Image (cartoon, rainbow, N blue to C red; front, top):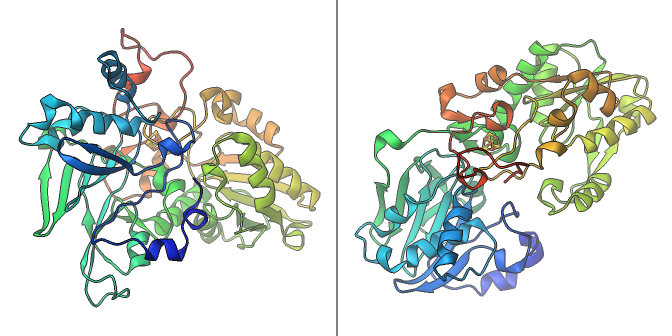
Length: 427
Ligand code: SF4
């Protein structure tokens, strides 16, 4: 449990042999934060040993699990991901010609899977392509020549840069990519008409690293465009613009460029403190936030400041930051958000809190949120503005946390009449 650098040291990594590997960093969305839930899950079933890593969240895992448990299956973890190994091990599925394809058709929701057997690495992506999955290639002359030739499957292109691999392409929604001694093989586990892209646009807003390409767009450039559009939609007279680092950085650049208000650095981020979002509970998140940011007094004193933040979820972090800015002498604080008000739960792998903890859902109006945060003005980017910053057709993106239009029915959250059960929760 913990960050990779806390868990593995160089010596342990050097001791790993073999010609094929599978690793995973996962913060807990479904299932509690406990050792059994660490991925890759490794199981030995009638077809042999398999390791499974999963990015995303399944929306019918609990429903399937209830059925399987009723017939005596024993689950080892509390994650949604484990259902796939139970499906694979089911005697009536093992003998199927397209064994994996058959099992993947039975699960719904967001999944970018990595499967590893003794001689094969397999990537599979849901028919909506909610989460990214990238294929890369390492040449023998690559930066890390000792590793040599081969292929890489990963979530973001920045990981390819780290190991000296070249970007080949994205694994397509609904595709299975198999890598074995003969190279790369592709197949689709659903017919073309069932492939309906719904890429998570929040990856561009917050989640992905800015040095990655996601869904065909450069994340950094998208975020700059979000900031530019935000300046058009919500202009305000001010002296400086700065970001809540790091995910607001590119948005602040865009806002500054478009508004011609000088870009400055109002907050300093402590890089020795981890990402607050991945801490499993709110107390830990808040203590991380307190240690993570400090204000640059000389930059904000006597100034009207525009602060650009990627998103406003609970709002508790910025409420503190607004107070810190005023204490440091800012005369006006204007908050600009590079996405629309987050009103709904995400069922596809982003761990938003319950609706009643989402500030936009809880307080409802802009003036009420402004007052609660203690800011002079608040401006959210529109859904149209968000979609204008990315290059694929608008209907190829999921925007459910803002619009409530869920591309895949959240099966586990519905009662037998197809209505959402009370008290929706994220992830
Ligand atoms: Fe992404 Fe929001 Fe859709 Fe979840 S609901 S997949 S966070 S866009």
